[in-house]
Image (cartoon, rainbow, N blue to C red; front, side, top):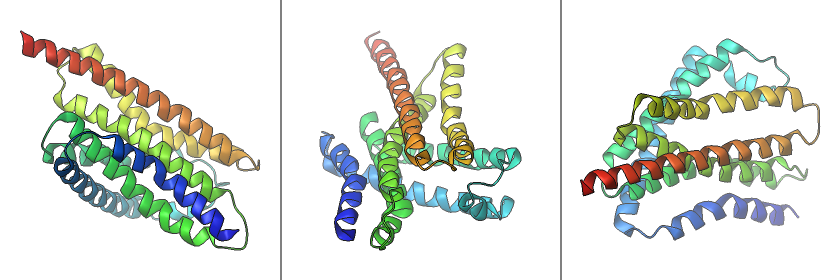
Length: 238
């Protein structure tokens, strides 16, 4: 049973990134280059974030393990500020890549989410699923990893638009508002987790909420990107 559960969790964890990689129609060489830049950017950004979190919030690991702890606004604010480094790392990765915008966005979003899945969930799931005690948390983590891929695609689109796009002030303000949602939403989920921890189904409820938010961000970012592409094509025609 443990090996079957491990196989199911790893299949769920890897199936969406695999499909996303296969449906990309761009050249393999440029895909591999953009993926390499994305992985390096993720590792360096994560290392810097860990150093900053250990400096300013040395007890953050214990607080994450204790879901019953009270919500700390100051800690949440510091976490949001540190997490905003993801925008810088994503931007530098996009800037380092070459090729069409779709190739860059694909490579960075795929590499970023895949590296996060391997480091955060893969090895934990491998060890945890083989334990005698059955726990749904590993399947929830695998599904959450797929949701993170959806969110990362949206996030990379937003970073690309802010870098390349030239919009009017109201449009830029809307894009920055949506960008801030990527950093605020995780802290809101942590707040919900504090209140829902007493219920056995809280993990599934949180998963549904994360999917709803990620899907909303994805749809909105795609609309922004399509508007950006139309604007660029019109400029080229003129």
